[in-house]
Length: 141
Image (cartoon, rainbow, N blue to C red; front, side):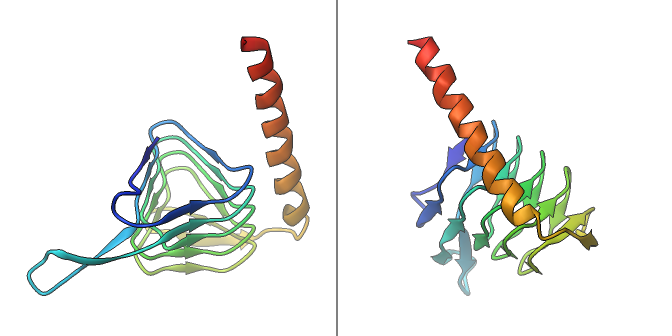
């Protein structure tokens, strides 16, 4: 995972899992001469899973969000809580995805609304994954 905290602030919540080869970087704003003038911080909520080889330049990814492999989240996009972003999806810059949305495609399109139970299932799954990870680390030592 590459985390470009040198470009601007990045906050990652509790019980998150980020896949191999993912790139996290704050969105850079370009000035009149095409040079970066400022950055938008990247905020990732709790219990969020991100697949392998994702490129993330979003402003915010909510809690309990599932992001598939090879997803591209454009500059300053906002993914609200309890969403699913399918594998190989491209979310264009400045897009806002409402809570409980399932999106897919290039460019991303709404597939359907997710059930409210996602708000319970995702945190439980994330904490179970973390507990498994901790148990496995104890056996490695």
